[in-house]
Structures are given as structure tokens and as C-alpha cells.
Image 1 (cartoon, rainbow, N blue to C red):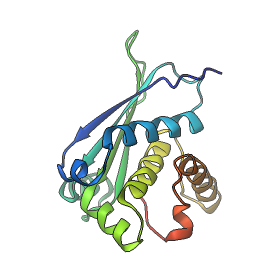
Image 2: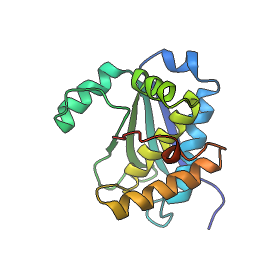
Image 3: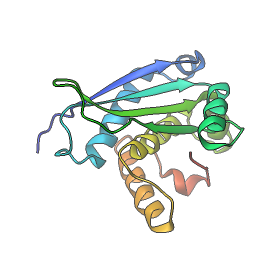
Length: 170
């Protein structure tokens, strides 16, 4: 097993609030996505991979949530897995996009009395796990996914988010 994490992380800012409120935003996003990828990805599946983290606002998440889930309200995070298919030779395998809503995440962090950066890390972990095929549709899956999230977050000294609150995740 290689120590190198072959994951490109594109960060797309659709809302300026993120950079104003989260120090070291690019590094936080990239290192969190890479740690999640390293912990949960089956390395033999693909060579180099790529994903995008879209730092958006409630308006975009509401639109996406209504379009793709039929729920006309913003949510904290949505994951959109890329279509399966062979990448052109030399191109990375596209995993998909993790889209996160600033206002909802900031409100949740404040209500749960946790740092915004901690909540953002949690939602990146959660969203990337979805891109890697993890889910929480039944109790056993949810328990496995939550345990992995907690283990990854411990690497960043982020307390167990499931002990702190009963937050909902997209």
C-alpha cells in the first residue's frame, strides 16, 4: 500500500462567506477530503482520483435539493457522485462533488456550540464518504458510517459530532 494519497481536490467558492469565517480554508478542505479518501477508498479500484468541494450558500443548496431530492429547502451538504465510466487515458477518475451551504452550516455550528471549522470538516467527511459509496439508509449502515466519520475526525482533534448533537445530514 502506497503512502501517497492520489486525490486531487478542487475547491470551488460560490459564496464569499467561507473564506471570511474559516481560517486556512483551502488546506482544511483538501486535507479533510484526502484523509477521508485514505481511510475509506479501495485503492485498487482506480488510479488517480479527483473530487470537487463546492463552498456554496443556502440558495444554491435549496435549488439543488429541490431539483435532485424534491425537497424545497436548503440543507447542509449534498453529494453528487460522478457518472461511472472509463476516464480517458491519463485522466483521473472523477468521484463527484460535495456541495456545502454556508448559512445552514454556520447556524448549525452555532446552535451546537461547536467551531464552524469542526462542523465543516465533519460535513466534508460525510460528503466524501457518500461519493465513495458509503450510506446511512439503515441502522447498521449508519452506525458503520458514523464510526468511520468519528475516527477520521479524531485525526483532526474534532470531537465526536454524534455525541454533541443530533444534526441531520444530506
